Length: 261
Length: 339
Image (cartoon, rainbow over all chains, first blue to last red; front, side, top):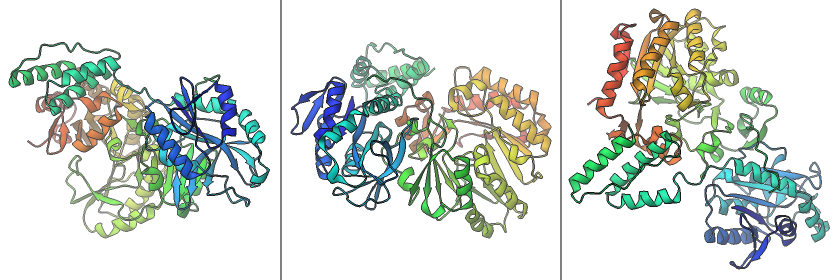
Protein backbone atom coordinates (compact mmCIF):
# COMPACT_ATOMS: atom_id res chain seq x y z
CA UNK A 1 0.00 0.00 0.00
CA UNK A 2 1.17 3.52 -0.81
CA UNK A 3 0.20 6.15 1.74
CA UNK A 4 0.12 9.69 0.34
CA UNK A 5 -0.37 12.54 2.79
CA UNK A 6 -1.23 16.08 1.76
CA UNK A 7 -2.31 19.02 3.88
CA UNK A 8 -4.65 20.66 1.37
CA UNK A 9 -7.44 19.43 -0.82
CA UNK A 10 -5.91 21.41 -3.67
CA UNK A 11 -2.75 19.31 -3.32
CA UNK A 12 -4.77 16.10 -3.28
CA UNK A 13 -7.04 16.77 -6.24
CA UNK A 14 -4.51 16.38 -9.10
CA UNK A 15 -3.26 13.18 -7.47
CA UNK A 16 -6.79 11.79 -7.17
CA UNK A 17 -7.32 12.48 -10.87
CA UNK A 18 -4.01 10.98 -11.91
CA UNK A 19 -4.25 7.84 -9.79
CA UNK A 20 -8.05 7.59 -10.15
CA UNK A 21 -8.68 7.52 -6.45
CA UNK A 22 -12.19 7.28 -5.02
CA UNK A 23 -13.50 9.01 -1.93
CA UNK A 24 -13.59 6.79 1.15
CA UNK A 25 -15.68 7.75 4.17
CA UNK A 26 -14.29 5.22 6.65
CA UNK A 27 -12.62 7.92 8.75
CA UNK A 28 -13.68 11.42 9.82
CA UNK A 29 -10.96 12.79 7.54
CA UNK A 30 -10.83 13.38 3.82
CA UNK A 31 -9.62 10.12 2.39
CA UNK A 32 -9.27 8.79 -1.17
CA UNK A 33 -8.41 5.23 -2.10
CA UNK A 34 -7.61 2.76 -4.79
CA UNK A 35 -6.53 -0.85 -4.41
CA UNK A 36 -2.90 0.03 -3.89
CA UNK A 37 -3.02 3.60 -2.65
CA UNK A 38 -4.59 5.67 0.09
CA UNK A 39 -4.46 9.46 0.10
CA UNK A 40 -5.13 11.40 3.27
CA UNK A 41 -5.86 15.13 3.37
CA UNK A 42 -4.76 16.01 6.88
CA UNK A 43 -5.55 19.71 7.03
CA UNK A 44 -2.97 22.39 7.72
CA UNK A 45 -0.58 22.41 10.65
CA UNK A 46 1.15 19.93 12.91
CA UNK A 47 -1.81 19.11 15.15
CA UNK A 48 -4.12 18.31 12.26
CA UNK A 49 -1.43 16.24 10.58
CA UNK A 50 -0.60 14.31 13.73
CA UNK A 51 -4.24 13.49 14.51
CA UNK A 52 -5.28 12.60 10.98
CA UNK A 53 -2.28 10.41 10.23
CA UNK A 54 -2.48 8.64 13.60
CA UNK A 55 -6.13 7.84 12.88
CA UNK A 56 -5.30 6.52 9.42
CA UNK A 57 -2.36 4.37 10.53
CA UNK A 58 -4.26 3.02 13.52
CA UNK A 59 -7.09 2.05 11.20
CA UNK A 60 -4.97 0.52 8.49
CA UNK A 61 -1.66 -0.63 10.02
CA UNK A 62 1.17 -0.56 7.46
CA UNK A 63 3.20 -3.62 6.45
CA UNK A 64 6.90 -3.98 5.69
CA UNK A 65 6.44 -3.36 1.97
CA UNK A 66 4.28 -0.24 2.38
CA UNK A 67 5.57 3.26 1.85
CA UNK A 68 4.49 6.74 2.90
CA UNK A 69 5.05 9.99 1.03
CA UNK A 70 4.19 13.41 2.36
CA UNK A 71 3.70 15.53 -0.74
CA UNK A 72 2.78 19.18 -0.82
CA UNK A 73 3.84 22.74 -1.33
CA UNK A 74 6.41 24.72 0.64
CA UNK A 75 7.73 28.23 0.89
CA UNK A 76 11.42 28.64 0.21
CA UNK A 77 14.27 31.15 0.00
CA UNK A 78 15.08 32.70 -3.38
CA UNK A 79 17.75 30.12 -4.25
CA UNK A 80 14.96 27.57 -4.77
CA UNK A 81 13.03 27.89 -8.04
CA UNK A 82 9.25 28.16 -7.94
CA UNK A 83 7.94 24.78 -9.09
CA UNK A 84 11.12 22.94 -8.07
CA UNK A 85 10.58 19.57 -6.38
CA UNK A 86 12.63 18.99 -3.23
CA UNK A 87 13.39 15.78 -1.39
CA UNK A 88 13.77 16.45 2.31
CA UNK A 89 16.67 14.81 4.18
CA UNK A 90 16.36 16.68 7.47
CA UNK A 91 13.32 18.20 9.15
CA UNK A 92 14.03 20.90 11.72
CA UNK A 93 11.41 21.75 14.28
CA UNK A 94 12.66 23.92 17.12
CA UNK A 95 15.34 21.86 18.85
CA UNK A 96 14.12 18.61 17.31
CA UNK A 97 15.50 17.08 14.15
CA UNK A 98 14.13 14.24 12.07
CA UNK A 99 15.90 12.28 9.35
CA UNK A 100 14.12 10.13 6.79
CA UNK A 101 16.52 7.54 5.28
CA UNK A 102 17.15 8.13 1.59
CA UNK A 103 18.53 4.76 0.52
CA UNK A 104 17.85 5.04 -3.22
CA UNK A 105 19.36 7.08 -6.01
CA UNK A 106 17.33 9.93 -7.45
CA UNK A 107 17.70 13.14 -9.43
CA UNK A 108 15.85 15.47 -7.08
CA UNK A 109 17.41 18.35 -5.18
CA UNK A 110 17.80 17.40 -1.54
CA UNK A 111 17.51 19.85 1.29
CA UNK A 112 16.73 20.39 4.94
CA UNK A 113 13.36 21.89 5.82
CA UNK A 114 11.92 23.79 8.74
CA UNK A 115 8.51 22.89 10.03
CA UNK A 116 6.82 26.04 11.32
CA UNK A 117 3.57 27.13 12.97
CA UNK A 118 2.24 29.62 10.45
CA UNK A 119 2.77 30.59 6.81
CA UNK A 120 6.04 32.55 6.63
CA UNK A 121 6.40 36.02 5.14
CA UNK A 122 10.09 36.18 5.90
CA UNK A 123 12.47 33.72 4.30
CA UNK A 124 14.98 32.00 6.55
CA UNK A 125 17.74 29.57 5.68
CA UNK A 126 15.64 26.61 4.52
CA UNK A 127 12.32 25.85 2.85
CA UNK A 128 9.37 25.76 5.25
CA UNK A 129 6.20 23.75 5.63
CA UNK A 130 3.73 23.23 8.47
CA UNK A 131 3.19 19.46 8.73
CA UNK A 132 6.36 17.49 8.01
CA UNK A 133 7.67 17.05 11.58
CA UNK A 134 4.28 15.84 12.83
CA UNK A 135 3.93 13.46 9.91
CA UNK A 136 7.42 12.11 10.58
CA UNK A 137 6.62 11.64 14.27
CA UNK A 138 3.37 9.80 13.66
CA UNK A 139 4.66 7.77 10.71
CA UNK A 140 7.88 6.62 12.39
CA UNK A 141 5.78 4.69 14.91
CA UNK A 142 4.54 2.52 12.06
CA UNK A 143 7.12 2.77 9.27
CA UNK A 144 10.87 2.27 9.16
CA UNK A 145 12.75 5.41 8.22
CA UNK A 146 13.50 4.17 4.70
CA UNK A 147 9.82 3.57 3.98
CA UNK A 148 8.92 7.26 4.08
CA UNK A 149 9.75 10.30 1.98
CA UNK A 150 8.95 13.97 2.06
CA UNK A 151 8.48 15.54 -1.37
CA UNK A 152 7.88 19.29 -1.38
CA UNK A 153 7.23 21.60 -4.30
CA UNK A 154 8.26 25.24 -3.98
CA UNK A 155 5.14 27.38 -4.29
CA UNK A 156 6.46 30.80 -3.24
CA UNK A 157 9.40 32.74 -1.90
CA UNK A 158 7.70 33.41 1.43
CA UNK A 159 4.78 35.24 -0.12
CA UNK A 160 2.02 32.85 0.98
CA UNK A 161 -0.65 35.45 0.22
CA UNK A 162 0.09 35.00 -3.48
CA UNK A 163 -0.48 31.24 -3.46
CA UNK A 164 -3.80 30.29 -5.05
CA UNK A 165 -5.76 27.07 -5.08
CA UNK A 166 -5.41 26.83 -8.87
CA UNK A 167 -1.67 27.49 -8.59
CA UNK A 168 -1.27 24.69 -6.06
CA UNK A 169 -3.19 22.27 -8.26
CA UNK A 170 -1.05 23.18 -11.24
CA UNK A 171 2.18 22.69 -9.26
CA UNK A 172 1.09 19.24 -8.10
CA UNK A 173 -0.14 18.30 -11.57
CA UNK A 174 3.24 19.20 -13.03
CA UNK A 175 4.96 16.77 -10.63
CA UNK A 176 2.91 13.59 -10.89
CA UNK A 177 5.76 12.01 -12.85
CA UNK A 178 8.21 13.05 -10.13
CA UNK A 179 5.96 11.37 -7.59
CA UNK A 180 5.64 8.27 -9.76
CA UNK A 181 9.40 7.92 -9.98
CA UNK A 182 9.82 8.45 -6.26
CA UNK A 183 7.21 5.79 -5.55
CA UNK A 184 8.97 3.26 -7.74
CA UNK A 185 12.36 4.03 -6.15
CA UNK A 186 10.98 3.72 -2.65
CA UNK A 187 9.15 0.52 -3.41
CA UNK A 188 12.21 -1.07 -4.96
CA UNK A 189 14.10 -1.00 -1.66
CA UNK A 190 11.36 -2.44 0.52
CA UNK A 191 11.74 -6.05 1.56
CA UNK A 192 9.24 -8.84 1.22
CA UNK A 193 6.75 -8.42 4.00
CA UNK A 194 6.62 -12.04 5.07
CA UNK A 195 9.24 -14.73 5.20
CA UNK A 196 6.66 -17.52 5.25
CA UNK A 197 3.45 -17.52 3.24
CA UNK A 198 0.14 -17.13 5.08
CA UNK A 199 -0.54 -20.88 4.78
CA UNK A 200 2.92 -21.75 6.04
CA UNK A 201 2.47 -19.29 8.91
CA UNK A 202 -0.78 -20.99 9.89
CA UNK A 203 0.82 -24.43 9.77
CA UNK A 204 3.72 -23.29 11.94
CA UNK A 205 1.45 -21.61 14.46
CA UNK A 206 -0.81 -24.66 14.78
CA UNK A 207 2.19 -26.98 15.10
CA UNK A 208 3.77 -24.77 17.75
CA UNK A 209 0.71 -24.97 19.99
CA UNK A 210 1.71 -28.56 20.84
CA UNK A 211 4.99 -27.43 22.36
CA UNK A 212 6.21 -25.08 25.07
CA UNK A 213 7.06 -21.48 24.20
CA UNK A 214 10.81 -22.09 24.14
CA UNK A 215 10.41 -25.31 22.11
CA UNK A 216 8.19 -23.40 19.69
CA UNK A 217 10.83 -20.67 19.33
CA UNK A 218 13.53 -23.28 18.67
CA UNK A 219 11.33 -24.88 16.02
CA UNK A 220 10.65 -21.53 14.37
CA UNK A 221 14.41 -20.83 14.27
CA UNK A 222 15.05 -24.22 12.69
CA UNK A 223 12.34 -23.64 10.07
CA UNK A 224 13.82 -20.23 9.28
CA UNK A 225 17.26 -21.82 8.95
CA UNK A 226 15.80 -24.46 6.63
CA UNK A 227 14.05 -21.82 4.49
CA UNK A 228 17.25 -19.82 4.12
CA UNK A 229 19.16 -22.91 3.06
CA UNK A 230 16.42 -24.29 0.79
CA UNK A 231 14.89 -21.35 -1.04
CA UNK A 232 11.14 -21.64 -1.45
CA UNK A 233 10.89 -25.04 0.23
CA UNK A 234 8.86 -25.83 3.30
CA UNK A 235 9.12 -29.12 5.17
CA UNK A 236 6.03 -31.25 5.89
CA UNK A 237 4.85 -30.63 9.46
CA UNK A 238 2.16 -33.29 9.60
CA UNK A 239 3.93 -35.49 12.12
CA UNK A 240 1.87 -37.34 14.66
CA UNK A 241 2.49 -35.54 17.94
CA UNK A 242 2.83 -37.93 20.89
CA UNK A 243 1.03 -37.18 24.13
CA UNK A 244 3.99 -37.91 26.34
CA UNK A 245 6.04 -34.82 27.17
CA UNK A 246 9.30 -36.74 26.87
CA UNK A 247 8.42 -38.21 23.47
CA UNK A 248 7.34 -34.79 22.22
CA UNK A 249 10.69 -33.34 23.23
CA UNK A 250 12.52 -36.15 21.46
CA UNK A 251 10.44 -35.67 18.34
CA UNK A 252 11.18 -31.96 18.32
CA UNK A 253 14.88 -32.56 18.84
CA UNK A 254 14.94 -34.92 15.84
CA UNK A 255 12.97 -32.50 13.70
CA UNK A 256 15.29 -29.61 14.51
CA UNK A 257 18.33 -31.79 13.81
CA UNK A 258 16.87 -32.75 10.41
CA UNK A 259 15.98 -29.17 9.50
CA UNK A 260 19.41 -27.81 10.40
CA UNK A 261 21.54 -30.71 9.15
CA UNK B 1 2.09 3.76 -11.68
CA UNK B 2 3.62 4.58 -15.05
CA UNK B 3 7.23 4.62 -14.00
CA UNK B 4 8.52 1.29 -12.83
CA UNK B 5 12.23 1.71 -13.52
CA UNK B 6 14.61 0.06 -11.08
CA UNK B 7 16.91 2.51 -9.32
CA UNK B 8 20.62 2.29 -9.86
CA UNK B 9 22.50 1.26 -6.74
CA UNK B 10 23.06 4.24 -4.49
CA UNK B 11 26.56 5.62 -4.22
CA UNK B 12 28.59 4.68 -1.13
CA UNK B 13 28.39 7.48 1.43
CA UNK B 14 25.89 9.44 -0.67
CA UNK B 15 25.14 11.38 2.50
CA UNK B 16 27.66 12.88 4.91
CA UNK B 17 26.18 13.78 8.26
CA UNK B 18 28.67 16.10 9.94
CA UNK B 19 28.64 17.42 13.47
CA UNK B 20 28.89 21.21 13.35
CA UNK B 21 31.86 21.12 15.73
CA UNK B 22 33.99 19.02 13.38
CA UNK B 23 32.97 20.65 10.11
CA UNK B 24 36.32 22.44 9.95
CA UNK B 25 38.43 19.54 11.24
CA UNK B 26 41.10 18.73 8.63
CA UNK B 27 39.84 15.17 8.28
CA UNK B 28 36.26 16.36 7.70
CA UNK B 29 37.50 18.74 5.04
CA UNK B 30 39.51 16.00 3.36
CA UNK B 31 36.51 13.66 3.34
CA UNK B 32 34.23 16.38 1.98
CA UNK B 33 36.66 16.91 -0.88
CA UNK B 34 36.75 13.18 -1.55
CA UNK B 35 32.95 12.94 -1.56
CA UNK B 36 32.27 16.23 -3.25
CA UNK B 37 29.02 14.95 -4.80
CA UNK B 38 27.56 13.71 -1.53
CA UNK B 39 24.84 15.51 0.35
CA UNK B 40 26.20 17.30 3.43
CA UNK B 41 23.81 17.48 6.36
CA UNK B 42 24.81 19.39 9.46
CA UNK B 43 23.95 17.78 12.77
CA UNK B 44 24.58 18.62 16.41
CA UNK B 45 25.47 15.13 17.63
CA UNK B 46 26.08 11.86 15.80
CA UNK B 47 23.54 10.03 17.97
CA UNK B 48 20.66 12.01 16.49
CA UNK B 49 21.31 10.10 13.24
CA UNK B 50 23.08 6.91 14.34
CA UNK B 51 20.75 6.10 17.23
CA UNK B 52 17.43 7.00 15.58
CA UNK B 53 14.57 4.64 16.36
CA UNK B 54 12.95 2.77 13.44
CA UNK B 55 16.09 2.30 11.36
CA UNK B 56 16.47 -0.82 9.23
CA UNK B 57 20.00 -2.23 9.49
CA UNK B 58 19.31 -4.55 6.57
CA UNK B 59 18.05 -1.81 4.25
CA UNK B 60 20.81 0.60 5.25
CA UNK B 61 23.45 -2.04 4.50
CA UNK B 62 22.85 -1.45 0.79
CA UNK B 63 23.30 2.31 1.08
CA UNK B 64 25.66 3.19 3.88
CA UNK B 65 26.01 6.79 4.97
CA UNK B 66 28.98 8.38 6.73
CA UNK B 67 28.70 10.33 9.96
CA UNK B 68 31.62 12.51 11.04
CA UNK B 69 31.77 13.23 14.74
CA UNK B 70 33.89 14.05 17.73
CA UNK B 71 34.24 11.24 20.24
CA UNK B 72 33.56 12.31 23.77
CA UNK B 73 34.73 10.28 26.77
CA UNK B 74 36.44 6.90 26.55
CA UNK B 75 38.02 5.80 23.31
CA UNK B 76 39.66 2.76 24.89
CA UNK B 77 37.82 -0.29 26.17
CA UNK B 78 39.11 -3.45 27.80
CA UNK B 79 39.28 -6.47 25.49
CA UNK B 80 36.34 -8.84 25.72
CA UNK B 81 36.14 -12.55 26.61
CA UNK B 82 35.34 -13.33 22.97
CA UNK B 83 38.79 -12.31 21.81
CA UNK B 84 42.42 -13.14 22.48
CA UNK B 85 44.71 -10.67 24.27
CA UNK B 86 47.79 -12.73 23.31
CA UNK B 87 49.15 -12.63 26.84
CA UNK B 88 49.91 -8.90 26.98
CA UNK B 89 49.72 -7.20 30.37
CA UNK B 90 46.97 -4.89 29.17
CA UNK B 91 44.64 -5.35 26.25
CA UNK B 92 42.40 -2.61 24.93
CA UNK B 93 40.48 -1.98 21.82
CA UNK B 94 40.02 1.47 20.42
CA UNK B 95 36.66 2.53 19.06
CA UNK B 96 37.51 5.32 16.69
CA UNK B 97 35.00 4.07 14.13
CA UNK B 98 31.53 2.64 14.66
CA UNK B 99 30.25 0.41 11.92
CA UNK B 100 31.98 -1.39 9.10
CA UNK B 101 32.15 -0.95 5.37
CA UNK B 102 31.77 -4.68 4.99
CA UNK B 103 28.52 -6.49 5.58
CA UNK B 104 29.11 -9.93 7.07
CA UNK B 105 26.02 -11.91 8.02
CA UNK B 106 27.66 -13.29 11.17
CA UNK B 107 28.96 -9.96 12.45
CA UNK B 108 28.02 -8.93 15.98
CA UNK B 109 27.89 -5.28 14.94
CA UNK B 110 24.39 -5.96 13.61
CA UNK B 111 23.40 -6.73 17.17
CA UNK B 112 25.51 -4.03 18.75
CA UNK B 113 24.45 -1.00 16.71
CA UNK B 114 21.03 0.28 15.68
CA UNK B 115 22.38 1.47 12.33
CA UNK B 116 24.43 0.10 9.43
CA UNK B 117 25.91 3.55 8.84
CA UNK B 118 29.50 4.35 9.72
CA UNK B 119 30.50 6.87 12.37
CA UNK B 120 34.03 8.14 12.00
CA UNK B 121 35.42 9.95 15.02
CA UNK B 122 37.82 12.45 13.52
CA UNK B 123 39.60 13.40 16.78
CA UNK B 124 41.97 10.43 16.83
CA UNK B 125 44.51 12.67 18.58
CA UNK B 126 42.39 12.27 21.74
CA UNK B 127 42.80 8.45 21.71
CA UNK B 128 46.53 8.88 21.85
CA UNK B 129 46.17 11.24 24.82
CA UNK B 130 44.03 8.67 26.63
CA UNK B 131 46.43 5.85 25.85
CA UNK B 132 49.69 7.51 26.96
CA UNK B 133 49.17 7.00 30.74
CA UNK B 134 48.93 3.21 30.21
CA UNK B 135 52.08 2.85 28.22
CA UNK B 136 54.35 2.25 31.24
CA UNK B 137 53.24 -1.38 30.86
CA UNK B 138 53.23 -3.66 27.85
CA UNK B 139 49.92 -2.93 26.16
CA UNK B 140 48.14 -4.41 23.19
CA UNK B 141 45.63 -2.23 21.37
CA UNK B 142 43.31 -3.67 18.76
CA UNK B 143 42.71 -0.72 16.46
CA UNK B 144 40.24 -2.42 14.18
CA UNK B 145 37.87 -3.99 16.62
CA UNK B 146 34.35 -2.75 15.95
CA UNK B 147 35.16 -1.99 12.34
CA UNK B 148 37.71 -2.71 9.62
CA UNK B 149 40.00 0.31 9.65
CA UNK B 150 42.15 -0.84 6.71
CA UNK B 151 39.04 -1.05 4.53
CA UNK B 152 38.54 2.69 4.91
CA UNK B 153 42.19 3.67 5.25
CA UNK B 154 42.19 5.73 2.06
CA UNK B 155 39.41 7.76 3.63
CA UNK B 156 40.62 8.07 7.20
CA UNK B 157 44.40 7.49 7.31
CA UNK B 158 43.80 6.26 10.86
CA UNK B 159 46.03 3.20 10.46
CA UNK B 160 48.91 5.39 9.34
CA UNK B 161 48.35 7.63 12.35
CA UNK B 162 48.34 4.63 14.69
CA UNK B 163 51.55 3.34 13.14
CA UNK B 164 53.24 6.72 13.59
CA UNK B 165 52.12 6.75 17.22
CA UNK B 166 53.25 3.17 17.87
CA UNK B 167 56.73 4.04 16.60
CA UNK B 168 57.17 6.33 19.61
CA UNK B 169 56.25 3.86 22.37
CA UNK B 170 58.16 0.65 22.93
CA UNK B 171 55.50 -0.87 25.19
CA UNK B 172 52.76 -0.42 22.65
CA UNK B 173 51.73 -3.36 20.50
CA UNK B 174 49.06 -3.04 17.86
CA UNK B 175 46.80 -5.56 16.24
CA UNK B 176 45.17 -4.44 13.03
CA UNK B 177 42.58 -6.99 12.05
CA UNK B 178 41.14 -6.85 8.57
CA UNK B 179 39.52 -8.52 5.60
CA UNK B 180 40.78 -5.78 3.33
CA UNK B 181 43.11 -6.19 0.39
CA UNK B 182 43.99 -2.52 0.57
CA UNK B 183 47.49 -2.27 1.98
CA UNK B 184 48.64 0.65 -0.14
CA UNK B 185 49.19 2.72 2.98
CA UNK B 186 51.64 0.17 4.37
CA UNK B 187 53.94 0.24 1.37
CA UNK B 188 55.56 3.54 2.34
CA UNK B 189 55.94 2.76 6.07
CA UNK B 190 58.87 0.95 7.65
CA UNK B 191 57.43 -2.22 9.27
CA UNK B 192 57.15 -2.08 13.04
CA UNK B 193 57.83 -5.48 14.71
CA UNK B 194 55.31 -4.61 17.46
CA UNK B 195 52.50 -4.33 14.96
CA UNK B 196 50.63 -7.40 13.81
CA UNK B 197 48.42 -7.37 10.77
CA UNK B 198 45.75 -10.02 11.24
CA UNK B 199 43.80 -11.21 8.24
CA UNK B 200 40.50 -13.00 8.57
CA UNK B 201 40.28 -15.65 5.88
CA UNK B 202 37.34 -17.77 4.84
CA UNK B 203 36.72 -20.23 2.01
CA UNK B 204 35.52 -18.39 -1.10
CA UNK B 205 32.15 -20.12 -0.86
CA UNK B 206 31.73 -18.71 2.66
CA UNK B 207 32.89 -15.27 1.46
CA UNK B 208 30.29 -15.36 -1.31
CA UNK B 209 27.53 -16.50 0.98
CA UNK B 210 28.13 -14.54 4.16
CA UNK B 211 30.81 -11.86 3.76
CA UNK B 212 29.12 -9.32 1.49
CA UNK B 213 31.15 -6.49 -0.01
CA UNK B 214 34.45 -7.99 1.15
CA UNK B 215 37.48 -8.74 -1.06
CA UNK B 216 37.77 -12.25 -2.42
CA UNK B 217 39.94 -14.84 -0.68
CA UNK B 218 42.43 -14.59 -3.53
CA UNK B 219 42.76 -10.83 -3.10
CA UNK B 220 43.17 -11.14 0.66
CA UNK B 221 45.88 -13.75 0.18
CA UNK B 222 47.57 -11.43 -2.30
CA UNK B 223 47.57 -8.68 0.34
CA UNK B 224 48.91 -11.09 2.98
CA UNK B 225 51.76 -12.16 0.69
CA UNK B 226 52.64 -8.56 -0.09
CA UNK B 227 52.57 -7.52 3.59
CA UNK B 228 54.97 -10.36 4.40
CA UNK B 229 57.27 -9.36 1.56
CA UNK B 230 57.24 -5.80 2.89
CA UNK B 231 58.41 -7.15 6.27
CA UNK B 232 55.22 -6.88 8.33
CA UNK B 233 54.35 -9.36 11.04
CA UNK B 234 51.25 -11.26 9.98
CA UNK B 235 48.71 -13.42 11.76
CA UNK B 236 46.08 -15.39 9.91
CA UNK B 237 42.68 -15.97 11.43
CA UNK B 238 40.27 -18.64 10.33
CA UNK B 239 37.80 -17.24 12.74
CA UNK B 240 34.86 -17.38 12.81
CA UNK B 241 34.45 -20.77 11.20
CA UNK B 242 30.90 -21.10 9.90
CA UNK B 243 29.77 -24.69 10.08
CA UNK B 244 27.95 -25.83 6.96
CA UNK B 245 27.33 -29.19 5.34
CA UNK B 246 30.52 -28.68 3.32
CA UNK B 247 32.69 -27.70 6.27
CA UNK B 248 34.90 -30.78 6.06
CA UNK B 249 35.78 -29.97 2.45
CA UNK B 250 35.83 -26.18 2.43
CA UNK B 251 37.98 -25.42 5.45
CA UNK B 252 40.77 -28.02 5.01
CA UNK B 253 40.95 -26.86 1.38
CA UNK B 254 41.23 -23.28 2.65
CA UNK B 255 44.26 -24.20 4.75
CA UNK B 256 45.83 -25.93 1.76
CA UNK B 257 45.14 -22.90 -0.42
CA UNK B 258 46.60 -20.52 2.17
CA UNK B 259 49.85 -22.42 2.45
CA UNK B 260 50.19 -22.86 -1.29
CA UNK B 261 50.47 -19.06 -1.40
CA UNK B 262 51.98 -18.18 1.99
CA UNK B 263 55.14 -19.56 3.54
CA UNK B 264 54.08 -20.97 6.94
CA UNK B 265 57.39 -19.78 8.40
CA UNK B 266 56.46 -16.22 7.54
CA UNK B 267 53.39 -15.99 9.73
CA UNK B 268 53.35 -15.34 13.44
CA UNK B 269 50.26 -17.36 14.33
CA UNK B 270 47.29 -19.04 12.85
CA UNK B 271 44.14 -18.47 14.88
CA UNK B 272 41.26 -20.92 14.68
CA UNK B 273 37.86 -20.33 16.21
CA UNK B 274 34.31 -21.30 15.53
CA UNK B 275 31.41 -18.86 15.43
CA UNK B 276 30.35 -17.54 18.84
CA UNK B 277 28.28 -14.61 19.89
CA UNK B 278 26.65 -13.13 22.96
CA UNK B 279 23.06 -14.22 23.27
CA UNK B 280 21.76 -10.67 23.20
CA UNK B 281 23.54 -9.89 19.94
CA UNK B 282 22.26 -13.15 18.47
CA UNK B 283 18.73 -12.16 19.39
CA UNK B 284 19.16 -8.90 17.51
CA UNK B 285 20.54 -10.79 14.52
CA UNK B 286 17.47 -12.99 14.48
CA UNK B 287 15.20 -9.98 14.44
CA UNK B 288 16.96 -8.74 11.32
CA UNK B 289 16.33 -12.12 9.66
CA UNK B 290 19.10 -11.66 7.12
CA UNK B 291 20.84 -15.03 7.04
CA UNK B 292 20.72 -18.64 8.19
CA UNK B 293 23.74 -18.00 10.45
CA UNK B 294 21.49 -16.45 13.08
CA UNK B 295 19.14 -19.45 13.18
CA UNK B 296 21.44 -22.40 13.73
CA UNK B 297 20.51 -24.29 16.94
CA UNK B 298 23.42 -23.01 18.98
CA UNK B 299 24.02 -23.95 22.57
CA UNK B 300 23.69 -20.99 24.90
CA UNK B 301 25.62 -21.09 28.13
CA UNK B 302 26.67 -18.15 30.30
CA UNK B 303 25.02 -15.80 27.81
CA UNK B 304 27.25 -17.04 24.98
CA UNK B 305 25.95 -18.89 21.93
CA UNK B 306 28.29 -21.46 20.38
CA UNK B 307 28.01 -24.58 18.27
CA UNK B 308 27.22 -27.69 20.30
CA UNK B 309 30.37 -29.03 21.94
CA UNK B 310 30.63 -32.04 19.61
CA UNK B 311 30.56 -29.79 16.52
CA UNK B 312 32.93 -27.27 18.05
CA UNK B 313 35.38 -30.05 18.86
CA UNK B 314 34.96 -31.53 15.37
CA UNK B 315 35.71 -28.13 13.83
CA UNK B 316 38.83 -27.59 15.88
CA UNK B 317 40.14 -31.14 15.53
CA UNK B 318 39.63 -31.11 11.77
CA UNK B 319 41.35 -27.76 11.35
CA UNK B 320 44.14 -28.52 13.81
CA UNK B 321 44.91 -31.78 12.05
CA UNK B 322 45.24 -29.94 8.77
CA UNK B 323 47.03 -26.87 10.12
CA UNK B 324 49.66 -28.91 11.97
CA UNK B 325 50.75 -30.27 8.61
CA UNK B 326 52.15 -26.79 8.02
CA UNK B 327 52.73 -25.20 11.43
CA UNK B 328 53.91 -26.38 14.85
CA UNK B 329 51.08 -26.51 17.38
CA UNK B 330 52.53 -23.70 19.48
CA UNK B 331 51.98 -21.29 16.61
CA UNK B 332 48.33 -22.20 16.32
CA UNK B 333 45.93 -20.47 18.66
CA UNK B 334 42.45 -21.77 19.13
CA UNK B 335 39.30 -20.42 20.65
CA UNK B 336 37.05 -22.89 22.38
CA UNK B 337 34.55 -22.43 25.13
CA UNK B 338 36.04 -23.25 28.52
CA UNK B 339 33.88 -26.05 29.87
